[in-house]
Length: 460
Image (cartoon, rainbow, N blue to C red; front, top):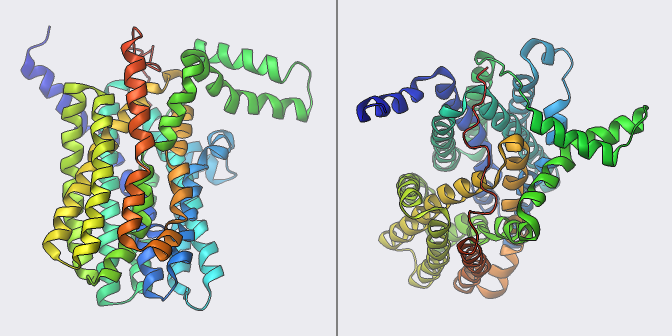
């Protein structure tokens, strides 16, 4: 057994690995476009005089992230001409997606939603599509680039980079819009995408790997669905069977009928946070707060509280387990929605805004760590990239769809009743976590526990 000091030194040394450092910048590139097509975009539209109902419908652009698993197999297996030979499978798709997002942000900067809303919406959708494609490639690179022992450091670096980018795309863009205009803000954000492009050009292409178990599962599924023979149709069916069907087959075989409950939990866990998010900036502006106040309190101070919540979440997961921490987080998310209802009644009091933001972001950070840990536990290592992409897509699809009606609810009922409604949307998640906890108490181990936790991965 190694001395405790040596073990701590080895754990900290993982952060010195060059690919872990690169993950920090790739995380920044992944996180930057998201607020620019979601929360920050809602502030831009509100400033342009767009009605609340239309702003709410713009939340559906975020559904692009939820359906990224549909084209993930193409990104995973189709080699791009020319650039694919120069950079490799992962990096070529990464650079293409980053350049697409940057071009889309420049397009949004050049358009006025007040006079050309339809074109503006299509360009924003292109940014979201490029960003979701970038997520696919970065997640794949993160899993394949380093050995298993460094995955924790990679995830931590990614999370910090992502949160920092959300701060830049949120508070940074708001500050630029306050002191200049929205066109300047989005042009600067497009320039910031260069961080990801430069990183993708500097990092190495990871080595692809497989194992006998994966090959056996794919062979069985392909044989059952595609059959024998040759021809384009047969090859297409075989490709779809191995890329899309096999991961689902493994997940349901491992969890049985209870897999339906697990999927329901994935679909509903963060609904209340999604429903609130799209209306947050319009709410702050309508209540009377300035863009600078929103940037300082809701974004910068909120960012700090999210980091605190994430750190607290890591401690609670280690001490009490993922599900109990998820239960606490789900209850806290519902309660913080009620705090927003109180703010709507009280009016533009800055200290009350800070208190509400503290609770909301602390809860969000706590929930994020616990939920990602639980999603990871549901993933079989043989299908880590594919299953995680599916789970991460599913976890936001219902919340994003329901959030599209947020503007309708606000205009019909007002902000205070809207936040009470948002709190109620968190009840299904609380109930499902309790069901899973009860189910786990009756079984020998958690459903979806990874049977291959100790299998080492190669490092490219």
